[in-house]
Amino acid sequence: MGRRFKDMQTPEQQYAARQAPAQAHQLRQEAQAALDEAARLTAPRRRESPAGNVTGVFGPHSDRDGARVDQLRAKARDLRAAADAAEAPAPKPKRRWF
Image (cartoon, rainbow, N blue to C red; front, side, top):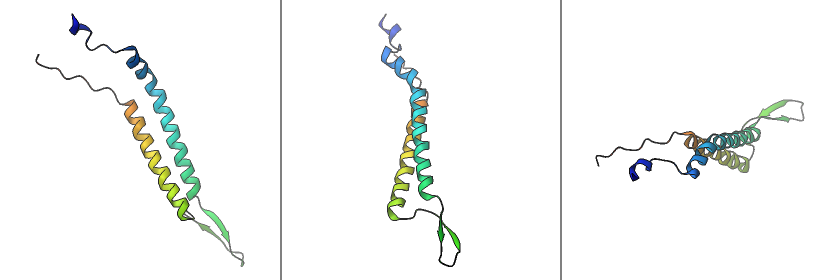
């Protein structure tokens, strides 16, 4: 009789399974926000010379901006990995001989 209910989920596990898609969506939004901020920090800026020439300055504009961009990209990568893990299906239980 005990083996019949062995694979049943508890109410907490059922709740977590229902919340996983919403949590994954939220993590993906946070990752996109981090990438948007990184893009803002690396966006080209205009520089005007006294002669009137306008040139674009690309990439991070200071060491601090470069470090922040690296940090944001790593955060986005970790958040996407967490979202993928939240959406991943549960592994099938192994069948044993006894």
